[in-house]
Image (cartoon, rainbow, N blue to C red):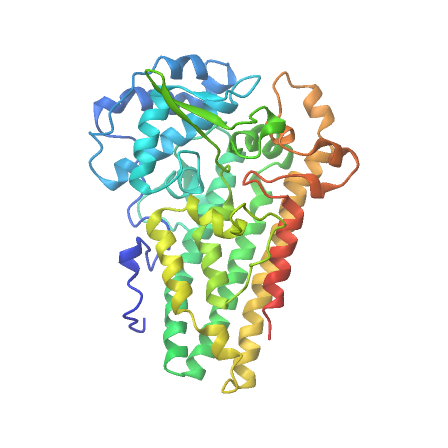
Amino acid sequence: MIQSPEINLDEYSVSSEHGFLSCDLPLVKLPHAHYAPWEAIAVQLPNLIQNGQIRCLIEELPVLTTALLETEPEWRRAYSILGFFTHAYIWGGEKPSDVLPPCIAKPFLEVSSHFELPPCATYAALTLWNFTTAPGKILSDPENVSLITSFTGTKDEEWFIVISVAMEAKGGELISLMVDAISAATTYNVQLLTALLYRFVDGIRDLTILLQRMYEKNDPDFFFHQLRPFLAGSKNMAAAGLPHGVYYDFGNGNGEWHQHSGGSNAQSSLIQTFDIFLGVNHAATGDIKLPQGTSYIQEMRNYMPAPHRRFLETLSTLCNIRPYVTSNEAESPLKEAYNAAVLTLGAFRDVHIEIVTRYIIMPARNGSAARQSSNTLNLATGSSQVNSLVDSKPSGLYGTGGTSLIPFLKQTRDDTKAAAC
């Protein structure tokens, strides 16, 4: 790799081999006996949710101290467990709970503060820190990866997560390439930059193939009706029964209300890295603007581990690919390579829209029979604008992250393709 003094990946907890996945595999179990009560519930989580015991057993937990968490992998495991507990408790009954008991709320606030993350089941909790594999196995092959903690205990849920893990691992191989490309642009090495952009094209195509493998072992109806409700957050959830979000009870009359987006692949630092690298402008993306004027994509950085956020910020200040390609000095072959990269990323987003349509839009339209056969509230549907669905207007459906789903994804795709010279 070309030396780039401005970007030291280690400073941002980014691996040149696996990207935003940690160099060491996530812990399967917290080693200290103090945390055995957490692990005892985590290993039984699917059954406890299924038989309706999850809330009562969580309420019986003691308030455990976080002082015995020693290593970063231990903190990550604690964050992942508590993220699962939080969403299982909120959504694991016939109606959502708008109060989180102290045995979860208190330690989760402490652990999330350690990572500068919100106390909810983020992409980091569900994916980045929640997988394992056998020694020597390649992480970019989803067949080699398994899930540690699960809401449903099914292959469908596992496949949904391990596809993302495999994509993070495969896409992580492109990070060093992008750093090299920035250095090539800095030194006006047109030939090298052109070659690197075409290698980037190949890498995005590989990721597209991986994404399309979602269909192999993840049933759309199962995903929508059984798994997706547990991914929902506490923000924009009035229709699902959480008009004020969730009250995190610290005990002794203390606590605070929280509203957070649900777990979403929009919280993947990898995908935002690609946009920054190519200079894709999402300033108008997603019909949703936050009150302070920040875009949804920018808001999702708050749900990323702090070092990864800082990596994106640093990359934004250093990336020079698009300005160089659009300058008068750039020659036609370089522009062709850049356009190929942009359009390939746009095609990746086309595939993503197809998957969202199959896994969310279509089951939502056809969900009445499934809802009638279930005694529990389908919170994925509850968080939608139901009247819009009845009128066959899928634009009314919201994602777990809180966006109006299809308009957001189409605008993101269009923004990407618009970056072509």
